[in-house]
Image (cartoon, rainbow, N blue to C red; front, side, top):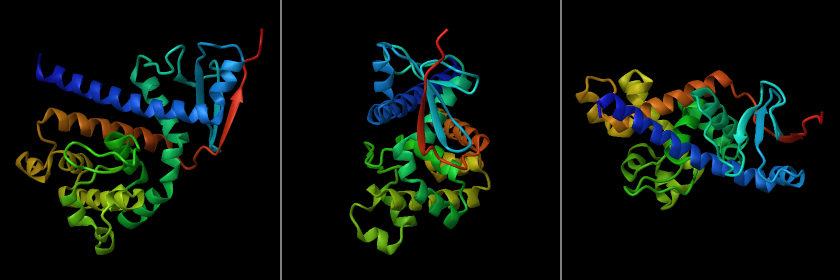
Length: 255
């Protein structure tokens, strides 16, 4: 297997793991809000679900695509379906990020961190999605904690005295995001480019310096940087000025 094929395989596997986690969260949200119940009660035992979020922040769902705005969210029988092609695949993830309660809950902290550090909300959101899939209680085998997977060393460097007094601070969404944003802002200032900052986040500053200030030739790091930047760019294109505040279920017209 060539190095190029290995990189593609690693990126593909990372994307699959991220999407499975995020789409399971979307399915739980739809069950809570009753949208899946509407589908099943309508006689669709193996229902599909399509949706989009409009400019007013309203999430629209239907059991079939009513027009070109609708993207596949849940598919027949399994509830999770990988649609061939990067665009469709990404649109499902963006729809989840628009409406998920776990994302909406931390939006005030993302805004606060962005104002304090100058890091785009979309970049913070992309990093969190890749690092923890918005699980505030996530703890890695190496001890990285919370939404942005902050280590104790990072906390000591970028945390405030008040934050460091609390033993569970890194599992607090606000504190975790603020510390992560400070780190990302500092890395971006020192390396002068976002991709190098993300590489330093993943592989360490030393690895980036040894590579001459660019993304080092490390398969996992290159896949990580690619995935974050791809999601960041998609979120910027989407221009998320408003969040989904309402769910609307549409029924296709009967012939």
